[in-house]
Length: 451
Image 1 (tube, rainbow, N blue to C red):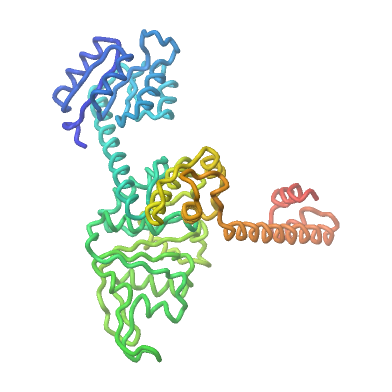
Image 2: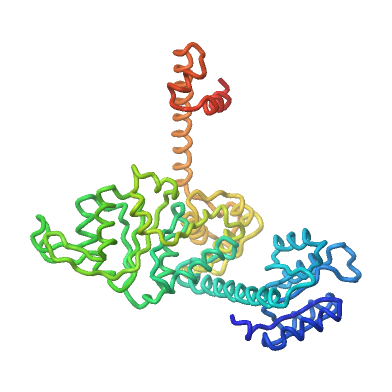
């Protein structure tokens, strides 16, 4: 949003400040409204919405908390105002102003301010407010089609990134645990890109064998191998002009990585059984459940390929770190499956909501989706209770298996340490050297295993 189109509310009990700000902004913004009494905030915001609010930190009011600005900032947030709030503070109250940032203020300015600095801060606030609205709009649009919904701060950051990077041709790497919705984010980037009317091709490259990898991605000529009965274009050609999404990129071999890197560098493919290069024009999005530090291990993944596929990275948080998004998604899935299975719209009682919030969701959004679908199918009334929601035994089994593996590994490590220490007659320095770790690291393990 340009500053010329912004509406600004200024709240300060100093009439000189109100006059000065009104005169300064009169030519800069669409509208300036000033108010001396903060207790009128509710009625003002009930009648009109603003893009930016300038709010004083100190008022001679009946509140007398010593930090009236924070009190009124909270009130503005309670009223669900979408305005970006800028706090006006004296130099001695900077600590309180910094605290206001943690409570949702966009920024603060210190009296006396430089006019250019104040105008620039208001301009930045107006742009930020517009970006957040775009993020919410993106969430709503995608929520109708592919369940990419959320109101948590981490999801707003992702929606904002999508808005910024989608219109570009930058290669994107999406990181996150299984079931977090990496494929939905890839699809959203395509839908909001300049290639939205072109093909969107998804390939689970982690599931391709060495023999199928080149044929599937780059295509083949008739007779290139035993079952090649006709010419066939690969996924790169199929995605020409559009977006190619390579899922589970972290699971491909070093040989496959070399082949992929060559295509990305040369922007052309050569079908199996042919020597003729075919130019390709694609936007590349990749995803993996591996942490970036594991990809950076050159014995596992080529560093030059990481740089090729990772112009911008998006990290998708696990569901357990998304707070009330769990409830938002649960209600969203409940509505979808109630319609699908011709059930009445179901409500969640408090026990069901508590059960959802207290579960760690190892299977992430995918596990939540299946749990809610099952609950809707099995529901006998129009209210879902805690015992109606049953989490996946598959995820529980996988978690138990991981615990067993971890326990076994710990046992092996403990026994190895004991044997090496015994071999070196209790000499910690020699034992640490033989184990290939520092003395400090060995002492940590001794404490860990209570040796």
